[in-house]
Length: 516
Ligand code: G2I
Image (cartoon, rainbow, N blue to C red; front, side, top):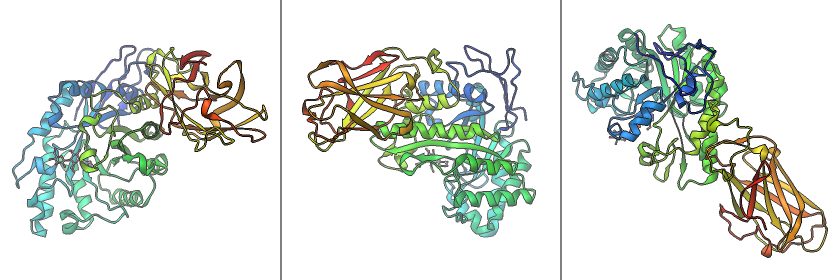
């Protein structure tokens, strides 16, 4: 199969030709001048390709007439997966009556845009036409192998990898009941892989499931199955980890280690359906977690040589499956419903090594690129502690090195000790990187004879990204009371909002807020 011999060029530097006869991408890094660098303005796929991986997206036929959507799909991604149009209910709605028209639209799009295609999916309990389940048990195997043979033969040369069997496990690692399992037991999986290999010996053959991203009962079951199939000489090339994540459920446990154990069996792994949903409405904390989850998936894949690439389960909230399936949840994708980039996109780009915005991330940002949000975490304005919650958001187009950033929160000291203790109680950045001290104001003003100054030991804030909540606290060393009600930076709001009485400095230059 000679699928795609693609050569894409970034504005700044030529990128390797992506020779995609297989998803074990053979990436030439022999450009004049050496391997591609992660140039600014590179597409997601170019950034990934520079690291030997692809970066792809799911798509679906009804979305393609959306010109703005299709433009980004065609330019930003090096791989696409049809979200529905290669499933059994579409391709063989009645026994022996095949219809590949919709899937062909997807493979044509891919060809026109130099993209590789992951075929999804040959055997699945869902989106399965009723006639399959109605067959007498002894006919299911033939129906399954006929289906695989027809579809994999049709797409030979156009599909680089197949999710041959999808979602075969229950959460506890037992086999999921399906017409196939009922008729053949777990042997249906080996039978399906053999049939796919016979129809298209060049396609990479995958087993694909969700909640197999981290170590756990379900991934243990997948691991045991993979080992057994390989021992039996069954053609299996890789494991697909869907990665439908949710900020409220935490990040998969030891994803990289899990990938590594499959790689150690000689298998490829792929992140096949990545999205990170949240309960709506979104807020800065959830968005910060989401950005971090996306970046952690990229980090895990980059750290494992046999991880061949990452596919997001569509790139925009506009076409996400999440709100239909989980009412009240959403905002799971890299671009919003208006196809505008979200913080998670900047986070993925940074994880892939982008140096966005002309920027050495170590350079200070331009004035106006950061803003401060504040809430009071204090139940009493007259007790012996002041508890500001802060978040910084990068509103500019340039990554900002946090070590260049300081923040000031002004308060009045009243009587009592003139010495203070300051605390960071919580921050997703880790309180170890947050510095804090109290200083006397050079020119004391009403409600502002002292300020809490917050800084950062390290880190970089990508365009659009938030630090997440930083919970701070201070007291006088004699624990005498404050009266915060007249403090310059204090307000009683208990939810985060823009705070122009908190000043943010980059490289010593005021970029946000009004000093007292
Ligand atoms: O559910 C998310 C994914 C989980 N892993 C396997 C994937 O194949 C699955 O994809 C989704 C599609 O993104 C949805 O678009 O699979 C869903 C069905 O299980 C798809 O949703 C269905 C709707 O439920 C139907 O009402 C609709 O007719 O899409 C169909 C075609 O648009």
